[in-house]
Image (tube, rainbow, N blue to C red; front, side, top):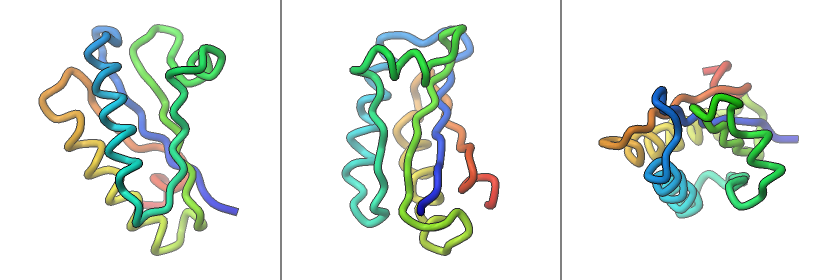
Length: 108
């Protein structure tokens, strides 16, 4: 069971070392949110996983997050709102933009 949410991080000029720092801050901020019981897939340190979750043009990262409930559940929808707020706050003032995708976001 469970459902998938993707946080899409983009920089139209190309991802930078500063963007990677912001990515790591986002991972830390998401892991600090214990109320939503999410599993965050930190792919940055695994070259093969990074190949999968980084766009070929090196302008986007697809950060997968697994939530325990179905996409339509109130808990998953509340988690979506919390995760969106965390992501938007983390990337504010940086060169990254954060967008939500995947089944949980589609239901919303």
